[in-house]
Length: 368
Image (cartoon, rainbow, N blue to C red; front, side, top):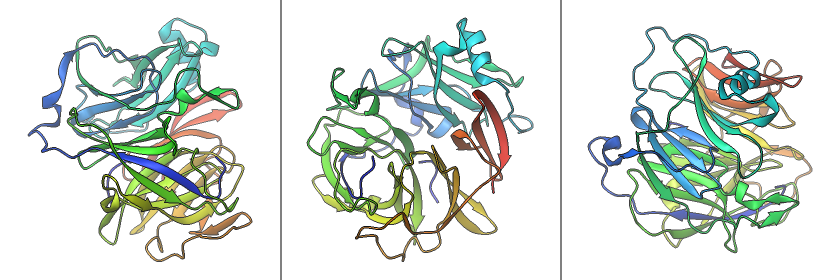
């Protein structure tokens, strides 16, 4: 197992890959001291040594930031913060209505949770990174004089390009995952096949992007689709080989072999489940329980799903329309309602951000 990683009945995406360079002895060796020029703080994921990757949709860039947070807590315990929105607003000196929490990620090196936040609304909102402190309270992560690196994201939608009244630029980065020396980035481009994944080597280099098309079938509508981005994805080994498991809106689950993602290739992803329409995936992790591997996926309208990986190698691909659900089975976890963010805290616990009647609470829960 590898570390974390619209409605359409079939999806045809574009995956852009960069050549993988020889890695430095220490992943942070390429980072330079300065202040990253973040225009927004969106999707988050962690790499080695406490390095935080931040997707900047407004600035069309991916940042690698050395948090310096590499020391495990003396005692890793549960994280619990009630009314997170109010506490974030108080910390930033604003009103809770002017705070948007975009993503959450747990630093595996320290066990601390990080939040990407917008202070204000719209494209001019100020980006902020927060984390849970050793005292259990929230604290701001200073971005002044940190060691960081930046990778420009090519061919993103223009700032005035709209779809159903929403800026497409906001969809240019929808999820991130660090896997074996590369940062995989999902989102929309301004190209013909606008749904894409980027694979960016870390340390970052100046290599130009070279594309590989990825085609998948979404059984709920029975047609191919090119403009729906991956909403959440993770990395997983099937029969020892690395794959990306990706979920799209409405909700096809697809496996894509990493070995096939070569420059200029046209790759067919395999739809291994239809998990129900009128739904938007939010976050997905892989964990072990009772000697078996499971996917845990939070969703906008269908709750948190526990999906077995048994049969991921042999389940019949979905290649024809289906009325609602088919493929790998799942169960809905009744104890995990109203989850808006999800990440793995340790081997037996997940960290969730739960919306309880309009109040956001950060909670530690057992993995089901």
